[in-house]
Image (cartoon, rainbow, N blue to C red; front, side):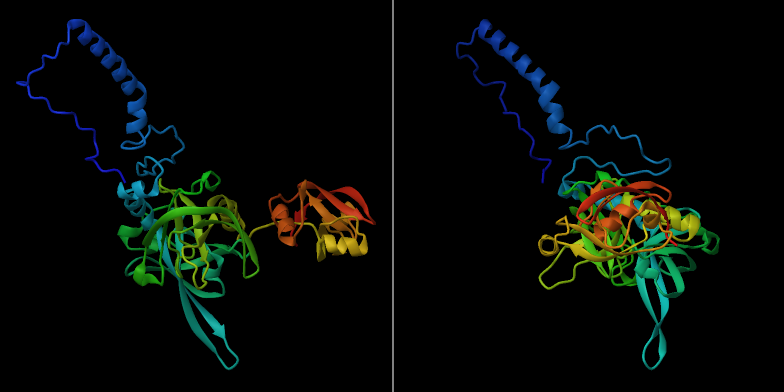
Length: 398
């Protein structure tokens, strides 16, 4: 970490000291000329490179800030330097009021009786009208939702829509039901998660262990990108961070150094000996899902209409001579589905979808969900040892 006193100290010369060591005017002129050249180099090249990015931020060329959303000035990239410069505090002050507590009261049915329980998670205000994004598992099976904006400031919320596939949900509060000083909601702004790099500052804001620790802020770095994890049957590509994420942080904000939300905190790995492995849904994954949930109350996805029976391996191919070492064995095809209309048949082996090889069910699902309803995609199958290329027009999931 740089200290302000680590500046180059000029040597001290006493004006009364003797200076006569035989230097003539010619020598002095040469020294002066050399000093001028050296000073020019320092001023033109070395000085800016040393000062900007080390002590001062480089002039920003990024003009895509959203209107009305003031961001902290964040120079350089080193997380420790940014934290020391107060950037974490600035982000917490800007984004913190947009992170709320969500209390979900739900009914648990046991063998002998039904009883009410509750859980607390986090959410992010994304619209001045009161829309809040959170995780699906925070609001699942809800009987009653309550949003807490500050200690003692609570309001009921309604479920707008949820999507178990991406573990995202949207709820809504009525700002007019809040005390007058809280009606002008602080709204968080999404950033571009595709531009995030490993090693960049990451700031998590949420409610770990419940409302007692509301809006706790932790800082770390982005530890990894596109982490392919399966949790409770859900396959997701997530951002990995070592910023502390605990129970209750689910649905909270993961922010970059400029205060943009680049992820929605979702999970952590809880294993003995494992520390600092938290995960967040990237903002670019979340944005289109949120838009559909607000517009339709659900997410409409394309489907192909096939049932997968097995994953093909080189071992299976060597035994059964299938004609391919990889792919998905199609057990059945739904009548009048996009697959059926395209000419795909049971016992075909799907090896490519929309130009991408598919070796697992999750890979097929990822490619399929990246397409739009009504889009025509190329499907490559192996039938009786021969490759066939077909065209399927994707329909909405029934």
